[in-house]
Image (cartoon, rainbow, N blue to C red; front, side, top):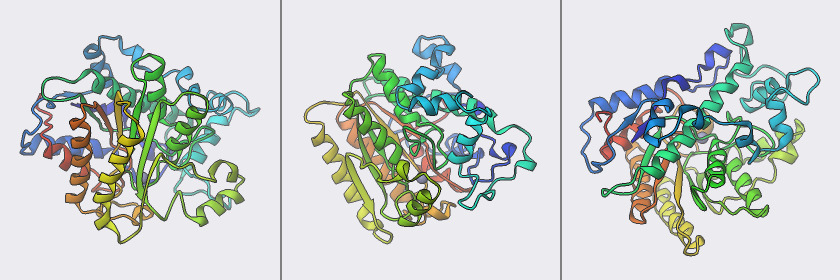
Length: 373
Ligand SMILES: [Zn+2]
């Protein structure tokens, strides 16, 4: 099952934001599926849910019940940070705008505009917040669809053409991620009694630092709801010394360093792409052994395409997998989860430039997910 919601387009140019994230990516994936051969190896996975509101009847709920509330954010984010997002706690009322400027890195260390032309904006920056919350609702809905979607052909599977804001930390956003949809969804599912253990399998090119930090914090607070795996570039943002030094100069040092470790860390050096798949398979086995016999109720896969050699973001060049290796990566994860009867919600996550749709499209085509319901 695929979850797609055209209403979730981020429309970054409307805000004067010039990062290379294309709203056309989801549509390109769907176009490919409509025209692809769809080998049909997963016959039960052929349904398209075109919007969060359309997903609600499948789940037997009113659409409004899938919305993300302030209480959902407060389960995983610091109260002061959440207050700022809702326009409280800063005298000038610019708390949300400042949080967005920081999360999208629109001001550099010298105070200059960075990939940001506010004079060309047609919408106020703060209007992005409601779209971001809707993206979080998409992630939560994908998890619900995965949890309810199993049948004789296998455990539930839902691929959300959005989400994956894995750099957002407890105290604030970074790396194009304002809030952490992965942990917000996990914690809400946990509070609703729908899950007790979630695996978070993050194969975006960048380390899932925010997710690791929040999952660890919740565990230390007595709620061991998530085990995390991150396979990522060994060097480069958010790990390299230059980035950390810059963060310290900006007064963000306490927040950014040290970076929390995922439960299973798979840092891959540039040029070591041949080791990627064997190490990922080893990491998945390690995740299973760390669970000590506790079968997770759900896996959330942060399926970043910025590991792809055709990706357009310079900072993800440290990993350059072929399209075939990207598909093999995803098939290995899905096969691992299916064999254990674990439902999975997949988030499209990172992917930049005009070829970023190719890895998710190739994967969905390979497992036979068609938009023809
Ligand atoms: Zn990334």
